[in-house]
Image 1 (cartoon, rainbow, N blue to C red):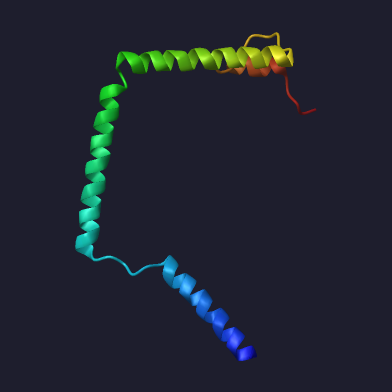
Image 2: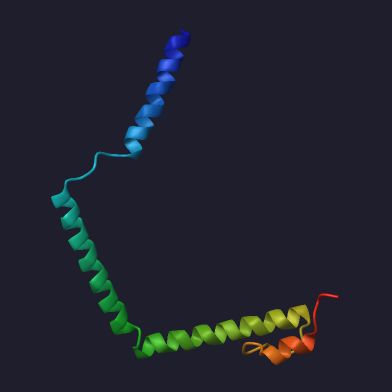
Length: 103
């Protein structure tokens, strides 16, 4: 009975491994799949490029920016942050003015 349990467990593990790693496809099949993938990628890029500069897409981007700005303002108000947001990178002079954290 013990040997039967071990055998069943081994078969189950090997069956899972075989199902997870199917037999490789032929090179002709893989070439065909690559051509189809490239075709879909090119068409997708073309479609996205064509609609990304349309009036509706620009309006959507503007609404998204406005929504993000409003959400940041509301979060800053909830947290009680009064200082203005940093808009750019700090310069070396700004960092040196803060002083060193080392004694």
